[in-house]
Image 1: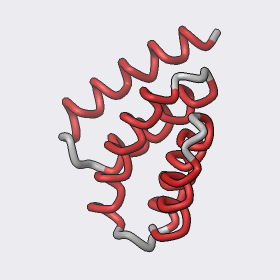
Image 2: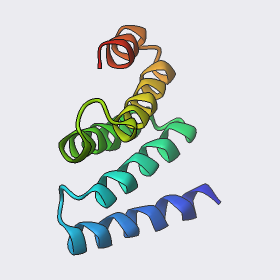
Image 3: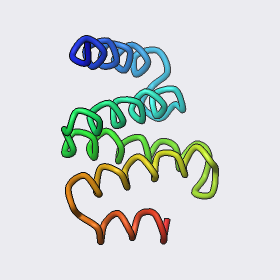
Image 4: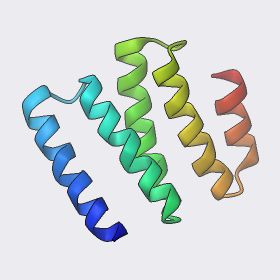
Length: 96
């Protein structure tokens, strides 16, 4: 029931944006989960879009070296790997 999950997560994202604002860690968390879901569905472009937004928020809230930020980088790297973009994945995962 992947499509139902995606719909529910998008609703949760809208609610969290409304309640917490665009730069809150809970918004970043929901974006990270949407990125993961899209990656599993093979929607790599969408996964990257959500993942980049999540990374921006997560780095802003927790900093570049926090484990939450590392989790988002890992998810983004997986999306790049799914697209056979090894150079971007390597840069993201090793240089972060």
